[in-house]
Each structure stands twice: as C-alpha cells, then as structure tokens.
Length: 268
Image (cartoon, one colour):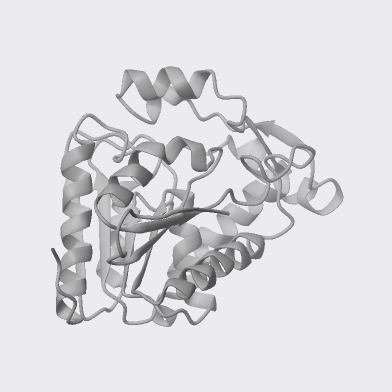
C-alpha cells in the first residue's frame, strides 16, 4: 500500500482499487490528478498482482483476499480524519461492490469505473467445464488471460507502456477464474446488502472487456438514495486512460465535490 499526499490540507481521501492483470503503477496519471486537485490518494497492489508476489502471480485462494485487502486500505485512509471515497476500476469495481456487501465501511461516496459484473468474452464451453474439475484438484494451474491490450484502450501511449510492463499479469489460475465468476454472481445476488452510499458508475460505450448491459442492469437494480450513471459512447474499457480521460476525471471530481458540499465542507 502506498500514500500520495496533497500539498495542502486534504479535501478527502481517494482509495483506488485497480483491475485484473494490472497494478498501481498504471494509475500514475489518475493519482497525480487527484493529488494535485487537493486529495490524498491511497492505493496498493491486490494479492497476486503487481509487486505483491512473484510466485503466485495471477492466483488467489479466495476472492475474500481482495476484500480484506481493500478493507485495510480504507481503514488506513480513516487516519486522515476527512471523508473517504472508494474508486474501483473493472475487477477493482467488483471488489468494491463485494467489499461493501460484506463489510461495514464509513464512506462518503463510491465511484465504479466499468465494474466487472459480466464479461464480453468467456473461455470456450469445454474450458469452462474443465475449470470446475481443475478447481478442485489443481486450482493453481494457469492459462492465458486472453486479455489484449488493444482491446482495453485506444490510447497508444498507454498501450505501448503496458506491452513492456513486466508486472502485467498474462496468466491466471483456474481458482482465480472460478472465484471471479462466483464474485460476479454474488454481486447480483447480494444487491440488497449494498449500503445506501452515493454511487457514481462510469462506463465506456465501446467496452470490449466488460459487458456494459450487465453494468446497467446492476445499476438499475440497486436501490440507493443517490446514484449516477454516465456513459462515454466512444470509450473503450479503461476510461481513465482514454483520449477523453480529462473529461472523465472532471466528471468524477465534480461528483466528489458535490458530495463534500452536501456534507458541509467548503470546496475551494
């Protein structure tokens, strides 16, 4: 876990949860945007990804490992004694949803960026069937993730960096895959357990990784006093990497500052 502190007294703390295969280093632009806008940022690498481990890269025993990790990050954010916002991208968005369904957290708001609630493409029926048996007898066996960088973002600079990123996970275990499928199902089953916290859901209209229809379905089913859903029609999956990312960031920042104003904070 790392902390990036604003140069002034923080307006709030933004806790960021990255997606599958990636790590905190891919969020340097977004971290600096929040920090320079007057927000502390807390972020780490999820278990089995980034700098957390080498021997078990792409593997988890349980999705709960992610939940426990994010809970720890949020509890660390409390030490600053300012409002805390939780921002999750893709699988990180799914982790945020499952964390809120299982843990009681004191949050001022939640931002989900293309939360992984269903996939556009799945392994073949044969591999999916095989994964059930392997999950019981050989859960650490790994296979290619099938995730192509060119399907994630149109930003050529981001693509080039990712292609040369030694921390990028390219293979995932059978257990990881089965736990992801289970978590996506639980995200829908446990919708009534979502606390009444203001939500902003950001979605790329040309997402080639996450099924945007499932995201919209989940959003419509969750009952909240305050929720917003915003689509960028031409954006791919990583909307905070896309050419329009500054517009996306400004929209997210406006959501945060509106929430802070409603809580009685004076935003400068």
